[in-house]
Image (cartoon, rainbow, N blue to C red; front, side, top):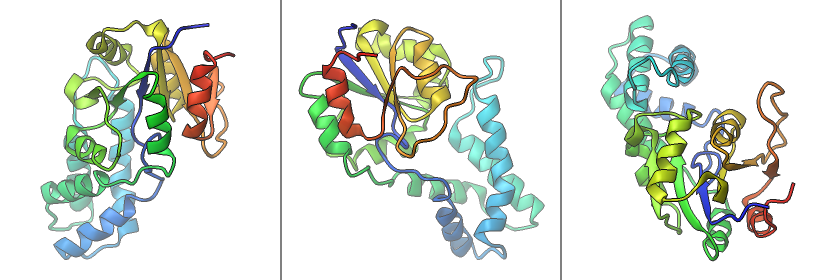
Length: 235
């Protein structure tokens, strides 16, 4: 069994809530603020393709790094153009960032992480811009030794270089490190490439993608994590 000394957490949908569709409330706010003649559903529908394309291309090592702010601002510019709206894409993205920076922790997050921190070093590694990640960390009662965002590293999960950068910052080896996250691609496949020990957080019993590595360890609540770690991550 591995001797785990360090636990690295993903942020969104792992420690804080960011359910599908919640961003539409930000779109409604933006429409009201800017007096735009559209609906949240319509604006979302035209913004989403740009976001989906960004999700596919951001891990291409041959492409220059693009931040979330840049990608999302481009999505608003595209949407406003298609809908023939005189919208302010900069202000829209700033509002979106503000809302995202205020996501609420899961009810068990602080207690579970505090219990983990009694015996393990902890850190945050998230696909995020600092503009929403760092303010959102203030919603947690717990702190972390190191916080690394994709914006800081200029690399996105699941590329192994990002995980390697975090290991080097902490001065630990992959074999002594657990990575806890909610996505099979970014948070299971990503760290497993380096020999880290992924723990998949699957709160709603989502099915596995058979084309991706199967997680050896999974929890349905962060409250299960301390016991899993203390048991040596037995298979």
